[in-house]
Amino acid sequence: MAKIKNIEGLTINDINRELSKGAKFVVYQYCISIIVMTFKRGSNIYFIRSGESSSKYIFGYSILTFLFGWWGIPWGPIHTIGSLATNFTGGKNVTPEVLASINSAA
Image (cartoon, rainbow, N blue to C red; front, side, top):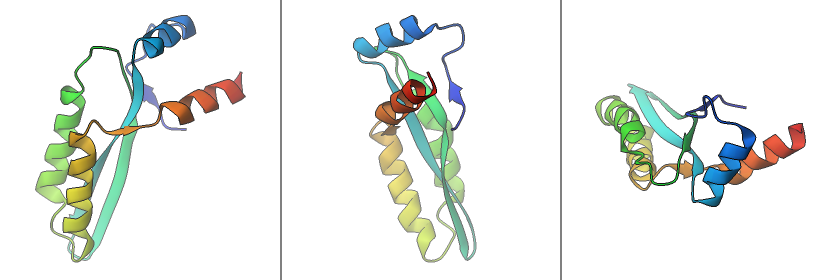
């Protein structure tokens, strides 16, 4: 499982309380192209607390994608647009998968 960021100092009860208020676990996408090779990857998992803006996490991955994603033929533009669309709609919500993993480990 990927590393979960932004949960430092939180207990399981704190996380559950935040989740009940609308918090979520999110993965952002990025794309890097090198002429004929294109790599589309996901970030680490971020815990976005209820009421917290995710723009500070979106910015870095989207800039990386915007600058380096387009250049691969043919998948660069396709994956770049897809990654940017995913990021600017809040990232990929992986809360159910994280909770399932936590519950199976406990």
